[in-house]
Length: 81
Image 1 (cartoon, rainbow, N blue to C red):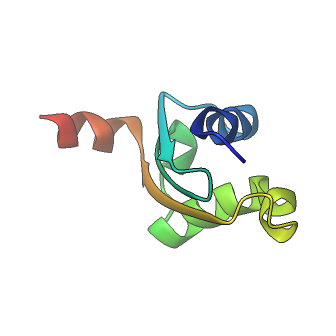
Image 2: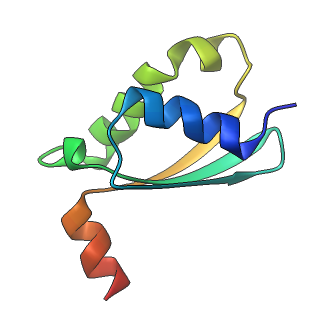
């Protein structure tokens, strides 16, 4: 069974993150991913960027479900107040 730490490591290896949190129960995971790489990208393009990085894991069903909040550092700072 996967751990949130494993999923977090896969994302961190694929994308430079200013902030990264992953939670989950071993099958379903939720991630907050903050990266400057998301600047100028739509929400769909941001999710596609992560999905491409995790394609092998998703296609093999090693990673079953991942919901994502994808933000730029500026969006993250504004959200945090």
